[in-house]
Image (cartoon, rainbow, N blue to C red; front, side, top):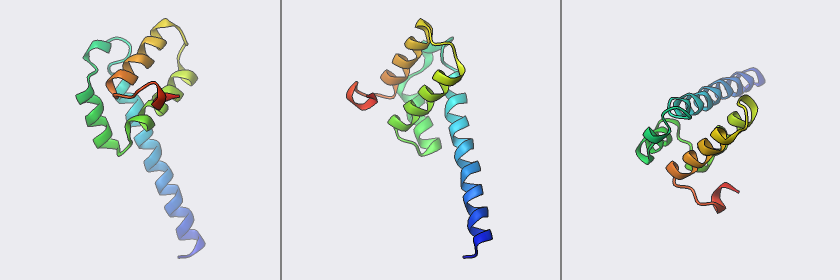
Length: 95
């Protein structure tokens, strides 16, 4: 494989990965914070299937977004807890 092909393949993978990260954030934004009670384990299970990410990866991606883009207040904390519960992650898994 030539260097050019390798760079193009890496660039393509990066774009696809970015799209999946964006899908995670946008999917969770549909529910958090305004429709928090509508977020269920079946919704997050569907998100895992669509993206190929496991629950911990989805949680980390959402947390990263939340810390960078939103005000960290009680509503944000409630969203983190809702994500953890609906992704069915234990406290040890999110540390």
